[in-house]
Each structure stands twice: as structure tokens, then as C-alpha cells.
Image 1 (cartoon, rainbow, N blue to C red):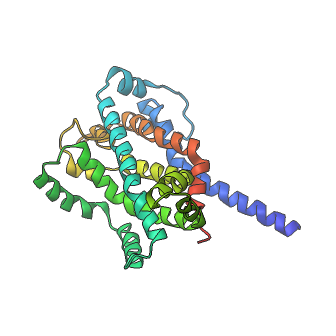
Image 2: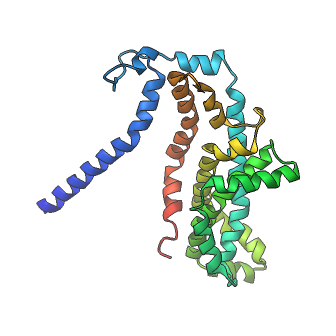
Image 3: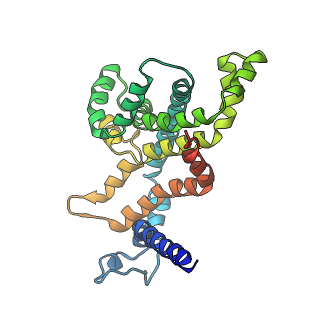
Length: 276
């Protein structure tokens, strides 16, 4: 019994250590944003700030509001990507789970492989395609570009969840007069809340942190997201670390808040259907 408890305490200690290691960059980003600029370059580094100030936040949110359009663009692109990904992934994952489709196993393998393809390899073909279609410098181009990265993940996560839902629910709905489509809409779709929130959150995250497609598919500053706005603080002769870290904290805040509010659904959505 004592050995079991000692093992538990050891595992807890290891978990705490790894958590601190992973969270330290976030802590350092936040503390750098509230330090006076001279303390940012102090030697040795100040782990705990001696003086706290919010000048960088006041400057970039109140005095200079040039970053607000970037923030708005990020919300539009990320939200559009999440909705577009769900619109395509839901019927695709359902079809792969319910119907005996020829080549379904090969398609799933292709989806798994595409997740390992770097985004930069997709950016240039999309740039050529969108330039011919006249879609460059538009929200639609960035939404479609980010969807190409989020869609394989979404289908792979959703398919096991649909497999875990008893097929008898749909059969009963068909007996009651529903067709396949109405059975999916009325019976299956309401049960997919955890996985929809999981996929939607991660799709939003993928688009929110995107830089490759923002750099490639949008040259107009009116369309570019916040990730491109961060580059304003990185110049040829130096980096404005306090401003860069404050805006980075603002950019990270929606993601952190989203995961804190939806963590229960995200965890259940990831683990749903794991027995399959």
C-alpha cells in the first residue's frame, strides 16, 4: 500500500514538473509584457517582476488602435474556418462511419497522412489557384486555406464518435417515418455536442494561430489577421519586446479562455468513441 501511494506521489510530482515546464513560456510572455523595458534585458533575468506596469497594453489597445482591425480579422477568419470545417466534416465523418464505401480505409489513411504535410506545401498551390479565381486578399481565401489544415483532423476525430452511437437509434427513427437525412439531423446531430465543440475549438485554434496562409494568400493589410500584426514589432534594428509580448498575450487570451470554459466538452469529445 505504501509503495502504491509513493508511486502515486512520484507520478504527481512528475506531472507538476512537466506542467510548470510547459506553462513557463506563457508565464514569461505575460511577465515580459508588464515589465519596464529596462527590466526585460536585466542580467540575470528577473523571474518575478519587481515593478509592474501596463503601458504596453494601454499603448496598443487604447492609444494606438491599429491592431484592432487585425484582431477583428482573426475572429472572422477563425470563426469562419470552424464553421466551414464542421459543415464539411460532419457529413463526411458520418458517411465514413455508417456506410460501406469503397476505398473508405484508403481515404482514412490519406486523411492521416495529410495531417503530416506542412502547411507551406499547401500554400503555394492554393496561391496559384486563388490567383486564377480572383480570391486572393479575401476572407474566403484564408478560411478555405485554414480549412484544408483543420478538415482531416476533424474527420478523423468525428468518425469514432459516430461509430460509438448505436445504429438502432437511426433505424428506430426510420421506422417512425424519417429518412436518413432527417434521422441524422434530428437524432444523431444533437448527440454530437462534445465532438462538435472539440472540433470547432481546435479548428478555431488552427486558424487563429495561422501565419503561413496569412502571409501567402493576403497582401492587403485590411484582410490580414493578428499573427501578421505581431510582425510590426519585429524590425531590422531590434524587437519591441514589451509591445510584442503584450499583443501576444492579447492574442493568446481568447484561446486560453475558450479552453478553460470548454475543457469538459473537449476532453469528452477527444475520448468519445475511443473503445471503437
